Image 1: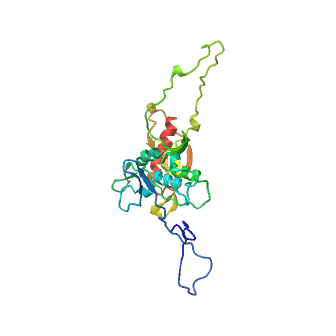
Image 2: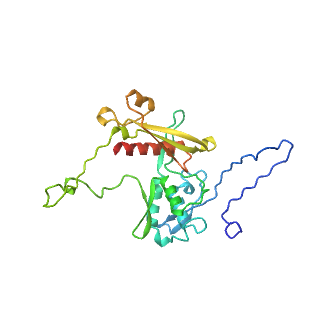
Length: 275
């Protein structure tokens, strides 16, 4: 509790019965903590409200990466609250972004019944001394978010479809000959298929396997759409199509659901294919 000698410090005590069989190294003790309760912001509802783990709820606010990041920005004990004030935070951007993490996604297991779950959730512990902004950025990345500082305020931006604000076309380019001393601003570059990733492998700590480190792989057929490309596939299907398996490994910190890892890998594959 705040005000105690060791405030905001987790203390674990283990007791056991001493027997003659006790010898050798101290056994490893694993524990699961639900210690941090974030706050959520609702301008229309009067401001701040305490979030919780929402036992039984579809999308507990206590696992929403956006609310967790915002709470750490304001926390004066373990966060950046002593350096960043509410006046320096664009609270509306966080309020608008949080529902993206709670968006319902349907999971269809191979050998089970389909079910719905929130798109992004965070389950992690911080056991290293890091800059607060770096930790907040890492938390937001689990919800496809990034922290930016613009207009003298900290804002969160989510990678998602949006309204077109700029259109690039021939009229945006300066061609040689447009002026007496004009140089062309057009530069054509080609991307080799050898550098086009079509397989992502993600490592994560799986909650269903007692948080052991597991891996999950997703692939995409990176041929042109007219040739049958642009669809998700398996490694065997890539090999059968005569495509080299171009693999990249990713580490998912704070993600303990295989279904969430699969969604993020497919999101990365769609980006790689489009670019």
